[in-house]
Image 1 (cartoon, helix red, strand yellow):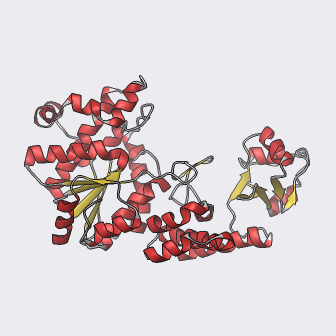
Image 2 (image 1 turned 45 degrees about the vertical axis):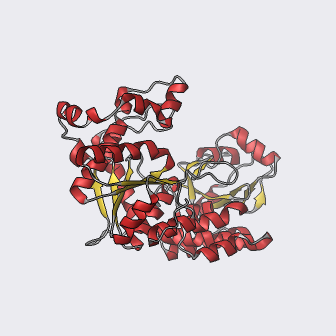
Image 3 (image 1 turned 90 degrees about the vertical axis):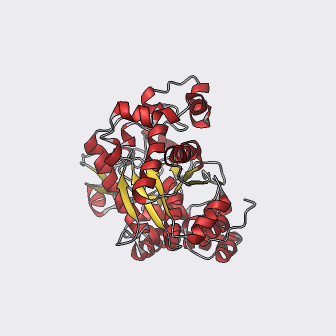
Length: 412
């Protein structure tokens, strides 16, 4: 970015590493200086919880509000019925109204941790409010005529799908028109002049800007954040076990804390800037630590991020549990529990681990044992056919898989 921002929001975005691209940095900067400005980010309701991949943009909304502006979280009750095809290799499964509303309710619990929805604060809207009752012919005539199919086909998110000769349904192809229409409606209804999102949304955002200018001759902007990967090349928030969820009923605060504690050394400074509110100088200092000291920086990262989402008490409890498990070899009072639905005489450790979901298969149990990576109550497991005592299960057995995965195995 050649423009040196004068507004607090863009300065923070620049210093902390949130910026990928903007349609007009100087113009947006001036609007923010004159502020306050209203901006939105859209979230389709495809799951019952947001995950760590959403957290960067949630932090952008949080900083946006903290610098005196008005954020809108737009829930895609309407667009979820179509499905965003951006950079996907297949069509999303279609959800009914009840499933979509259930997902919106779950996602709303997370937003409430980061944004103030009180009077004059953030606003949560649902685009079903204006999309559900659209008249198809009127919409085609008034809105569809502003879109060039040639241009829509040129967007990378669509082109990559077609280049791989993978089907793109007409339903999905309409998605970018509906998202563009969202921006027009938000500008009309709420004076919203900025749409933010991940860099994979650039084409959709530009469409909305163009439509709003063409139809209402309104000045609006787009701002994108980078799509983050970890230093070892993995997509942020994805792991072998699936997504790192933000709702505590889908991922315990302890497991969430552990996700951040297990960050690689090279990611610590960058993650502190993006996912905490620590001063930039402090983030740089912590990220530059070496050896054993970098581990304490990771603990600080885990505590700060967990406190924002789950509260200080949950963060302190997770740290205490982790120190008990790793440093003292204890069981840890609030390890995530894996339950066995029933006990049968002769149950083996391999059967117990597979039935409880701690390990995927008996073959995996044997591999872990061969590598010395499986422990029960801190003692190495050497025989997959070793019997498990019912009394021990009722009391709880701490199972350690490798150095980072720990569960309390109990009868359900």
